[in-house]
Amino acid sequence: MTSNGALLQVEDLTKHFPVKKGILIERTVGHVKAVDGVSFEIREGETLGLVGESGSGKSTTGYCILQLLKPTSGSIRFQGVELTGLAREELRRTRRDMQIVFQDPYSSLDPRMTVGNIVAEPLEVHGIGTRRSRRETVRRLLDTVGFDPNFTNRYPHEFSGGQRQRIGIARALALNPKLIVCDEPVSALDVSIQAQILNLLKDLQRDFGLTYLFIAHDLAVVRAVSDRIAVMNRGRLVEIGDAEQVYTNPQDEYTKALLAAVPVPDPRKMKERKRERRKFAHTLAEAAESADAATLEPSQ
Amino acid sequence: MALLEVTDLRTHFFTREGVVQAVDGVDFSLERGKTLGIVGESGSGKSVTALSIMGLIPRPPARIVSGSVVFDGRDLTALSESELEDIRGKDIAMIFQDPMTSLNPTLKIGTQITEVMKRHLGVSDEEARKRAVDLLEEVHIANAADRLNDYPHRFSGGMRQRVMIAIALACNPKLLIADEPTTALDVTVQAQVLDLLEELRDSHEMAMIIITHDMGVVAEAADDIAVMYAGQIVERAGVLDLFDRPEHPYTEALLGALPQIEGEGIREGRLTAIPGRPPDLVDPPPACRFAPRCPYANRNDSCTTEPPELREIRAGHWVRSAHPASERAAHAQGAPA
Image 1 (cartoon, each protein chain N blue to C red):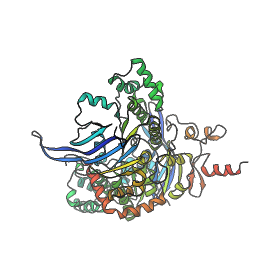
Image 2 (image 1 turned 60 degrees about the horizontal axis):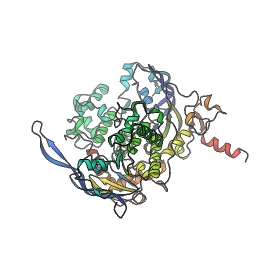
Image 3 (image 1 turned 90 degrees about the vertical axis):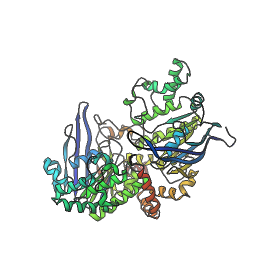
Image 4 (image 1 turned 60 degrees about the vertical axis):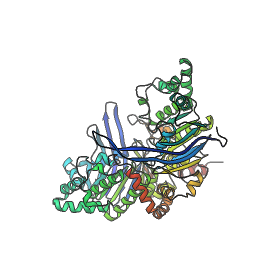
């Protein structure tokens, strides 16, 4: 741990993906700078919300931090230890302390494993406890996330999206991690269920002193959980600061346009916001074009 | 007379597991030039409502078991398939959430825009092509004439949605049904598409139904709102009255569950989650479908014995509940201290 209380320090992180052409003989014709010189830190016990649109590089940043993707360059220090260049075995040990919750609870849980085995797997991989003690741990974890521990022998497809996300969260908690990267954890869920999961994440943070990197495109969702906010656009970090500050007094033009584009559930305010966003028409059009271009198929 | 008048619409799916009452009591009317927002969560029946209006429900397993859909003076539920085909794409057009699955990937978009005009308006190839260029320009696609020769995969998500809108507008429909039109889009792209829809509604003098799960989208785009829960409309009102004074406990809960972008103490606070989840529509609660999750339902009243009717609690504001907010307030005031 460093003296300023930073659990994670990211410095000048870049991730470039090669663009390949040719069918038989592939050659690299250029690079997409998915993440392009990003620096920030996350303090112990806080939530940093990372927002941005399609192609902003927010998820790639998360995957680089967890070393699920190998950064092109830059430094990632977790509890003072440099993660880039760590040997496999050391990385495996470090990973106990950093976990991920994925967006899609439908595809991120192995459909052939029972709920109990899904949650127990990280414990088995790291050789923690006996078979019997693991069974107890799994029941306790499921209970903690509000999932009925009597259903450990069932399969994921038997449960709704919200319940599956609880299973994913229980699994992420199994190794008692310090940092959890939440990658769009509620964007596949209905509003009423989304609220349940957001409240759960807040409760767990309070009870276990967790630190979150909360990646999402929904600015209202991010606001609900974050102490600080980082805004990404086209691979770069354009603004970072206290959540209240960023939302009420954004400094960067892109952040302003992004906030102005959010529809709010209030028709009176909405009239005002529509006028407001006309002021940013140009930035908004540019942002829309670049976000939208990210949805083009890669061959373009 | 209203352009569209839906009365007691019920669409059920006859499956091996039983009869799914996907739409089970939908009433609304829509005036020319107005936008109705239908909001609800997954499985609330909002999309099946739209497909029922269009005559596009999969038969079997689904069937409209009762009700009428009177559009421009004709009951669509009584029409033959070929009569419906003459209306679909011409007088009523529809756009969907995912434009990639509704555009044909093997046909140039020029072909896809012109074929609907040739089918319904009987115009020549040349005339159809000319109009197609105009349409693409109208939805703000640059280099319209060239882009007619592109296939759908050459367009980004937002541009595909614009192409879909252009196809929908080709025959100048009286009603446009947009089913989650911006759900797959980024928020900046969404803002542009919503602006575009509003602009086109006015210039084409269309009525519009926007179906969405997003309260923000209806707050922005709709004149009237219908809230659906478990196959039924539970509340219907003008947009301002609905947000200012929501009546149904579900609408109130839904608004409370929404994270807010503006306000104080957001980080510290908790969202009001709605306990439980929506009912199984094979075997819904016998009376009020929201009763099992409703904080105001209790055994001493009709909530579990008598299905509530959609009733007009004040001018233009309809609610299906034994415990609407204003009656609860009146009751609390009248109760002895």
